[in-house]
Image (cartoon, rainbow, N blue to C red; front, side, top):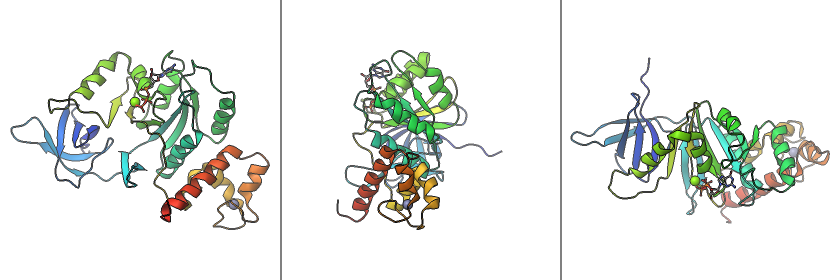
Length: 298
Ligand SMILES: Nc1nc2c(ncn2[C@@H]2O[C@H](COP(=O)(O)OP(=O)(O)OP(=O)(O)O)[C@@H](O)[C@H]2O)c(=O)[nH]1
Ligand SMILES: [Mg+2]
Ligand SMILES: [Zn+2]
């Protein structure tokens, strides 16, 4: 049997927390400037003689990586080796469904499964939310309405997270951290302990952290962003909207972008209501955005 490598379970800029195969947690530094481990990475690491820190010397090959362009336009890896994305929205902050679509698109492209979670169900939501969630369910994404505050449907969320490594993503303030805390229940204090120990004797913010859930599975809490655009090429967008990809098999042209091309099966499906108009508009918008970005006009 191959011994599993240490797993990166928290990152604080250049400092890491590792979960060792024997269940111990250790703090680690990184060898060299070029190495950039993220949560979910398996790494080669060993103890530094005379210190409690370990040293990470290499990152094992990643099965996938969830990326986003940072403010400087450079691609930044959020997490690696992800099995599932839980994309969260809520009545407040006002949901931006295009952001949900973009995360779902990213999930398709990295071969991760995905689900849509609508949190804060204790608050009143726009009536259009039902229809939008139904559209996601219709194209095969599990959807759950829950409340981290009241505890509603926490079982269903725990079930979604039960296997493998998941990451919760979504706009800032939708309740990602609250939901994880709720799921952790009595283990909540442990989270605080992990986050507070920077090992440098001063407070350091956690970039991201992976928590083992009592019901099974592990989940990565990621800091929310105001906007999210996957670092993608235009032809990848077509693949990332699963119902559009499925319909496109019947388009007249193999390289159809489903905009103004004749014989477009996707446009026909939008016209007859098989594909949601909102999803189609979101697709067109993201396609236009990535086309602009990749041609350097942005
Ligand atoms: N009413 C209500 N409020 C909630 C619920 N879940 C979270 N909140 C509140 O929403 C606010 C934001 O919650 P967080 O858990 O910090 O949100 P987040 O998604 O982790 O935000 P970032 O870390 O900034 O990305 C807090 O004031 C929470 O108390 C819920 O189910 N119902
Ligand atoms: Mg948070
Ligand atoms: Zn088409």
